[in-house]
Amino acid sequence: MEYRQNLLAQDRRISTIKKIKLIISLCFLIPACAIFKKNPKLQYKAGHALLRLNHLDKAYYYFQRAVENNPQFFKAYSRLGDVMLLKGQTDGAIEFYDKAIAINPDHIDSCVNLAHTLLPGATYEKSLLLLHKFIKPAAYLEIGVQAGKSIAVVDKNTIAVGVDPEPKISYPITDNTKIFAVTSDKFFEDFDVKKELGSDTVDFSFIDGLHTFEQVLKDFINVEKYSRNDTVVCIHDCLPLNNHTSRSQEITSFWTGDVWKIVQVLKKYRADLNYATIAAPPSGLGLVTNLDPKSTILSDNFDKIISEFRHLDYNYGYKERLSAFNVIENDWEVIKEHIKSKSRKPSKAA
Ligand SMILES: C[S@@+](CC[C@H](N)C(=O)[O-])C[C@H]1O[C@@H](n2cnc3c(N)ncnc32)[C@H](O)[C@@H]1O
Image (cartoon, rainbow, N blue to C red):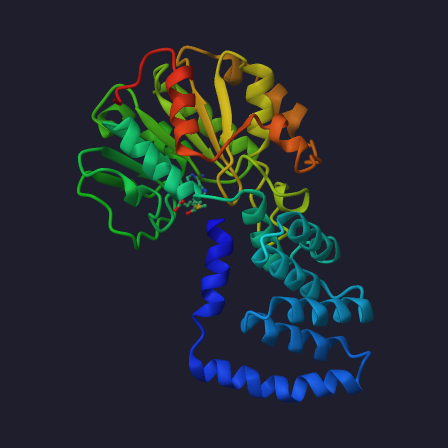
């Protein structure tokens, strides 16, 4: 319940002056709500002040009044979700976030909080850090580096290659990290990958570039060419939240693209691979082991696969998605055992 604790901590971190201001505002808001009983905006403001002051039951009361008076008030539903989350009632929180999202699929707070409620625990960045410590890769390849948050966790002895047409590195990266400011396709076409990696094969790779299914499939095909059967490949955003946030077009602020289709492709076309999704927030981390650099199944069937999956819609329920995406617990011991048992060769890690 790390995320819930963070929410609580945020609320408790307010300064004394802020607290006094909130209490003063409530001296006006509560009588005003008693007079204007049908005014959802006032009720929302009162609920919000009470929530900041950590008066959860009272906050719940005012947010409830707000949604009774305006059943389309998605922000009030979202706050009801926050109250439930802070009370440790996750099922109730999920229900309220769902209501908010049903009214406004682009409500970022509801999407983020729902994603973290459904997938509690360490984020994907933490999983990547632990994977680096465990695999101890000599060669690491990352597609999509952005500010460098994920590539910054590599060990100083790892030769790390990052590929991104628009890198905006602001995290400290090691001296052994090379950033190539090109698209992944261009990188695989124009560069001597083995030379850049300082090795014939990659030990660990993270695919997090262009979030379209076609590109992820291409990236996976290219990465596998430089893999061994004990290489570990992670793919970001393999467990979407809902239909709106998982389309190829970015129509919501919380967006994971249609990367998730790669999971269904691998399950259907590459049963020889071991695929699992770590239930890491906010949107899952795909974990592929048992790679086969000689396999041409995906490249031979590329066009067929694209036309087969291009128009597929994401329509899985929260429980249903667990088996559909081979979800494993977001627990480091479980992840470690999964890698140990699913890699054909023992990994280099202890
Ligand atoms: C979600 S961000 C990566 C975040 C980073 N991995 C992290 O966790 O901190 C996606 C990145 O992919 C990059 N990108 C877009 N198209 C790409 C392509 N064709 N090849 C490689 N990277 C691409 C974008 O410029 C963006 O910086």
